[in-house]
Length: 159
Length: 83
Image 1 (cartoon, rainbow over the protein chains, first blue to last red):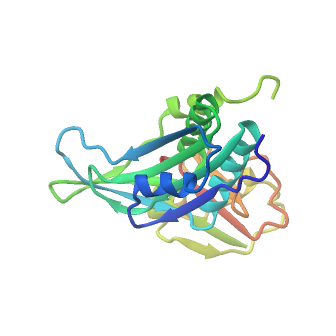
Image 2 (image 1 turned 30 degrees about the vertical axis):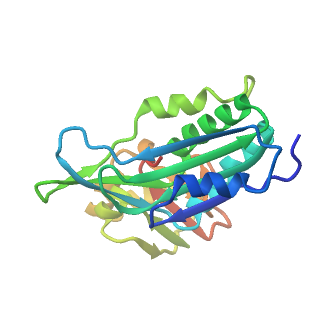
Image 3 (image 1 turned 180 degrees about the vertical axis):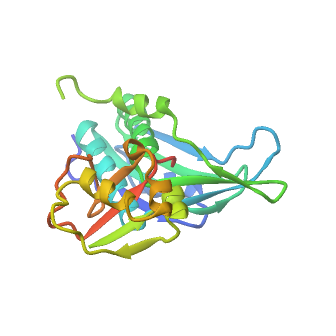
């Protein structure tokens, strides 16, 4: 059981380098057997989107992701955890979010990364607004009930 | 007390934040939403369906029955769409 893993949480406008983030967790260590990364990208399905604009709640974004990450560290034996979430205007194909979970074995790393993403979707204070290719504003992206349900499945029974 | 608004709540109210003096009798988040809604058309428009509004007190999520005594900062926003 890893003792004091301190998750690295970054809320930033600029892009991130997935390979560099993995290397940052594993460099100089021989006890990590599994690294799971999840990258969320800005997606455009019909060529109609010019960008997503991500608004966030400065301060709370860090705090809330920190709380979710702390719960992940408590529930799974992780040896490292990095979460990066971007804000501002992001074009289709660009990165939005990154979770890197490192553990001795794959199951903990997979589950922790999955848990983090489910909770980020429904609890991290970010809001996406669409900007359309024709120059107009497409409006705010609506929250999906499926995302709330995805987070609910991690609730321990009896809670 | 400072109120902060995000996303379409901010757009409909027409400002990102404001300091307010609460009248007596406003004890819970639900009371606050009801009072705000009565402050004008833009608030009515933003808070038309109070059940969908998410609330954070001092940067932590709370339910609508939460007491607001001691809050420095209360944020109102739509369901989140990050990740």
